[in-house]
Length: 378
Image 1 (cartoon, helix red, strand yellow):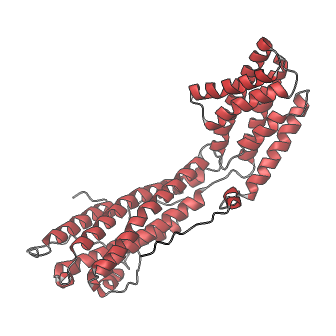
Image 2 (spheres, one colour; image 1 turned 90 degrees about the vertical axis):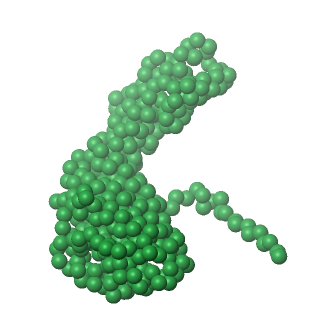
Image 3 (cartoon, one colour; image 1 turned 60 degrees about the vertical axis):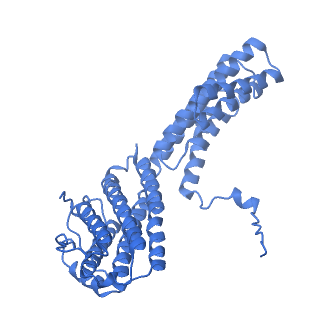
């Protein structure tokens, strides 16, 4: 038996490039903020080129206004601490290379001791170094550098807020709609598998697809977090918050539905048998699971077409799902009405002696899904 080693060659230049470009509008806003900050400082402050203002404007323009505000605070705090530290050591120890090195080392230690954010921690050392090497250090000079930073941050924040404030609702809305669609497909696979009598191998594939929904849900949550942050302090946020609140509510319900469909798929894989499809109760379960898939698919369609006047999760839904098996097709026809497709809970008078554990587990999962979809509390 020969072992073949596979060598993966990674292009180091590729690591320097992002998977996607920064929106061009943000590039324009950054340029406008830098120019405006520099011009404002040249008018208000008599001195050299306002480097601190330009750097602040470059760093503070972020994808959201809330992020810009936080970056402005972090940078301003780092500059103040670095400038004060550099000015104090210059007045005490004079101007030499070892003083600059001492200030940089102390800036690193102070940032570590105070547990500053990476932005503030880096800025302390950079500000101290620039103050000691870029000009004659006097209290007035140091105060001007602090003022430059504050003005640059304020200008960047204003520019980011006034020039089409970013709203990142679109990616989050699309992620939730796709998550609902794929969750519905997972339930439909369970219904088809029960009807067609899948073997363990096909159930294993279905289980892998169901488990992948957890990662997809995590990505949707990250998109929702970014959307929520983009609406914070955003003057355009009011009309979008209703949609975002609905998406967050739907994502939370989908989290429960994903857990249930993953458990159902795993239970069937572990307990499947050739005669399972012959049990009439299993046929009823397949029909109910297909109806669940239809309702979740309808929810995804409603999310995709939602407007600012959207409502919460609970409420009537409608859908029509064309599926492969007879029971699934019946379920799709049953949801043509505006009411949810789920019917009354399945009653089992006499459980199958061979499959009663699996049937009981599936019935319990269906009951919990029913509560989640219909808002019942049986």
